[in-house]
View 1 (cartoon, rainbow, N blue to C red):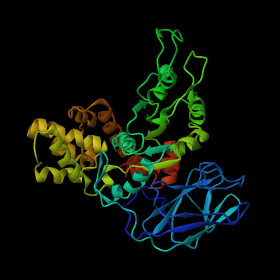
View 2 (view 1 turned 135 degrees about the horizontal axis):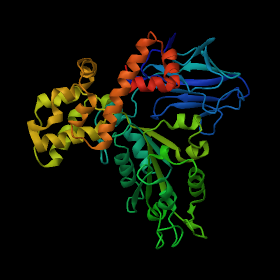
View 3 (view 1 turned 180 degrees about the vertical axis):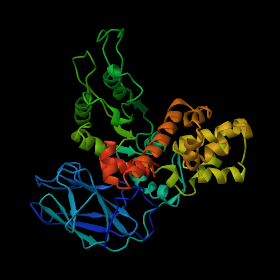
View 4 (view 1 turned 90 degrees about the horizontal axis):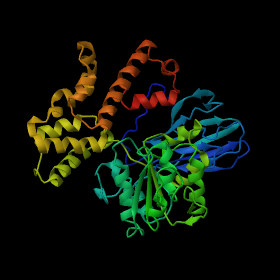
Length: 449
């Protein structure tokens, strides 16, 4: 059976305990005989293409570098075409995406892949713990990550942590550091979005005195500062393309050269990276180097958004309330309302909500129904003439969170408008919007339904 997902929002539901396994076999083409098993243990899609970063790497010249992805979706296998040049076909039908049950033939370029269903995977490695280091969460989505996190913590491999803003990527990175053999060493964070573009190279690699105007003395970069420990490069997807080859060279040689310096300095650093961006797409669009991605993403962890972590809202809210020292518990009716909220700012937004409640109680202006039920009333606000920007300004949020709420509201209403205008046809709506179909679907998944 083939179920297309052209009208699907792209969201990932909670995975059942008896998920299936699938084997992707190369039946025809230059790589006939190759195979890869998809079992859903690793929380990232399996990529098929000619890039070295693909789990199932092909040599077919008509296959794109990142051609398609496969991932477990309950009892089925989910296939997504990654805006490939020559398209992806399932049983003679061109698809943007599809749910597969096994037995289908998938064609990419001149290569034919056979989809073979394996036995259900029972007793999945979901931890019984409700946390990993500083990361708190007892939902199935989170507990399935903990065994992988434990294993990665004890290793020295580079890891890319992916997820929406506010999901706790930095907290997870610090937990990986603290539970590993480098715990006694420094943990240094470098945010690619927090430094002026002309200073990024100096911040990364350091500089010598007189290297540029204002360099009145020598200074160590974050690689040297993290020597013997861990370096987290936050928002790696925003790194200037001109600096990406220099970062790659530092990673490959385990040495840096300060700006204005004439000698290489050896460094012993484990590098973790975090991003809110879809790095696969950034590579596909040529905005992020494929070889750098390959070097950084030896392992990948995708943190789920809070709206998909069943039961974690109340758990986290009570934890934040207790740790604030202000109150020991929260009103049950308030927690119940919070559990129904979509939390576009994720865990960070929830933490701020609890902090405001602890400080202001019923006087907290942004805990009123017009805020918590904002998703349901967005259309009504537009119809009644209410200004959504004024509504967000009344919340008195930090700039980043306020901007995210305004953008999320705009995206939701824009997607609904353009879909309505084109009769619900995703392909035509995406084309009219000037974005790729896959990106359009991601926008819908973020709340533009």
